[in-house]
Length: 589
Image (cartoon, rainbow, N blue to C red; front, side):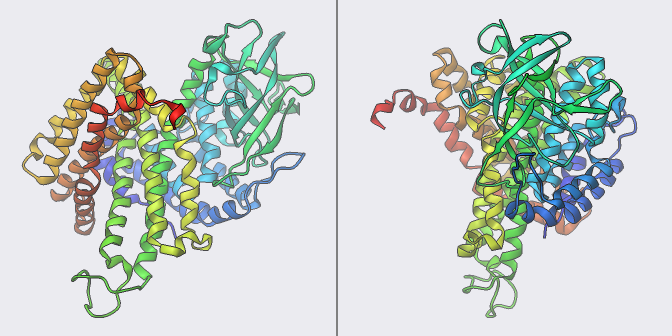
């Protein structure tokens, strides 16, 4: 059974990162750690009692396509009704349109609980939240009045509609066509891989669709963003006739079977009624608002599944008796002990938890920076925090999901042969998490964004500022083994950043060849910094919980001894590994 890791979340938010610095900022005048605790407590109950019990239902029965539309399991419909009634869809949205205005940091913490308990369910409100943010920031007053209140209440949901069969991740190749017609447009085209593109959880779905107005420039400069309701909305806010958009099919997938991934057809008849968001030909700019929000949200899915898989594997390891652990590993020596006392099982469990803890800390740190970037009263502080948050987004998305994949694989391994049997449940986490390294941009796309838009564009200024802050933080810990290891990793990151910038000057191919190793190096090193701080704080007993402190200390020690050494390997790849890739001839593969 899943248990919401509330102690872990409170420790990271209150002690490790200091969410008290949000209190009193514009829009957060009443924010406090106590408020956070109360929200997390209720979110934990919802995750454990409502979402977790139907996770297996989503996997085994899943969403079903019919000619009339996608049909969800009844248990999902009931859970969504409770989700909306509980106000969870409103948590992070603007109070101006009925939201609660909670900070991104708290929203990220809550989303982890949804993702751990039931990833397939969590994807629906995630996309709605991203659509809401895009309309809030770029929509007209009429669009906000028409769509936001019911999207924020959860009465309607939203989607992000980008991908086309011939284009994939290359948005410049989008062909969906928009024809002007009075105060709106008519949309014609086909889209694939649309998460929750159709379902029966709500009465309406608001699609945010990328398309190309007739006569627009070629490539990404000619892309526009449109609001396309599944059901048209009348002037009085009531629902009218069905729009010309339909779900042609849903994908048969490796995992997340409870989340319908749809092929949508727009304009089979007269054309789907569509409303322009912002200005023509600026759609990609607007869509990046949604994409950045979604990338943070997908990143947390990686460590959320790592945490869930860890809990599942730990419960099994504590009860499964097999063989005799070597050494004096546990009580009652000479009697059968569970496999949790085997040295290799301990190694795998600590590795899984190390991945989850480090990734959680990085993601919540990134979310905190985004909050400060949006709300801090000092303009220079806002700019610096926003720059750091933007820098961290591709790292959170790429590194956390890659670590989630490794962790859930270990979760299967700990179960041995039983892990390969679906009835144990271990395989579902592995199957579900696999998509997270792919959607919202593959790890390679995240790495390209990191080295190009984030490190290359400002000549490493934002990254070097982060590195300087990490080294300053760690200076007082240089006399400890964990602190010294973290300092060494951060220094390796500093050297690798300079190597990357030097490679940029020789052309784009060299840094592109080592972009993913550089991203992974960033994750390991930043994780090392936060794990060293975690170790130091628990030794100072900031939690007043001796058992929790010891647990965090052994996880931090395992992280720096078994996970952090990978930073050195990836730094070496960044320094000298590009040429073998650039010179490789695909014809010889």
